[in-house]
Image 1 (cartoon, rainbow over the protein chains, first blue to last red):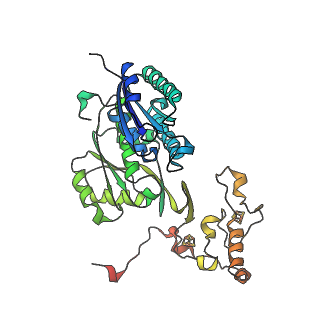
Image 2: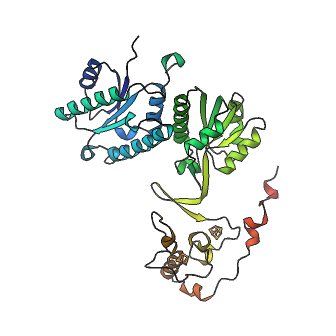
Length: 141
Length: 228
Ligand code: SF4
Ligand code: SF4
């Protein structure tokens, strides 16, 4: 059986009010996609990013509002810093930093969404299966 | 509070690699404030170790817990129970917490995940500064609340030295420090000035009695009224 590449999207619900606009094109590209909607990207913690990669994801992508639209003013900026901190951890582990990604996008920016989806698809396919991720047979998620 | 920083992952991996069942124990007070050993950082390290071992070809049983204060034995009872199922414990507390936990677990190896750095303060978000060396004989009352032993690079009791430039300490010339270190003695001067107590500087401080500090072996505080 072919193993599908698993992508988890952590999406600010202001930036991604309609999950299907993301899930459908990525699933059509052959990826296994799960979207977790967050009230704001400022709620996403480093341990959540790492835990997702350890237990259920080959690639984790955070979609947040552009800085000027962030409801918590600094939520997106701080998210970028936390993501970089988590990426430093990946480097220490010997995994690719690119297994964690972030895009800042307004909900109505259709062209921008298309580009981000293309990037996620290309990145997931080039990185492939995450060797740090627990495989289904090794235990429950 | 005690400020800590995480050890490099490679060093932690080396310490715990012989053990299969690992229990990570965080401490939710000082090292949580310094973003190195609290609940969140414990979960980060647990996930990172899980991945690192898997990348190296082994699947470990990694569990995590956190206590309010690892340096106080009463808080450790639940950890002792959880550690019964572990081959080794990795503590994210300061050195005092690691040792208190080790004392409670005579048959289980306990390893430090952090490097304990200093007694300090959260100066700004993400910036911790050392400001006390625990000298055992505090003289802050004489220096306007600014510690020359810790914050003056030379530990001068009667400063400044001749090396201060534009308010900055000479130590900045010796190595790159971010953010740069201010001259503690100029700060003491400014502070005493604003308190209207500059006359304090007219009386040189006498040589310090260092026997109260860490030069005399491990220190003890014994309070008969608090004893069982
Ligand atoms: S004088 Fe001693 S006790 Fe007081 S702050 Fe400085 S090092 Fe700490
Ligand atoms: S410049 Fe000021 S803080 Fe630095 S060593 Fe000299 S007196 Fe101490």
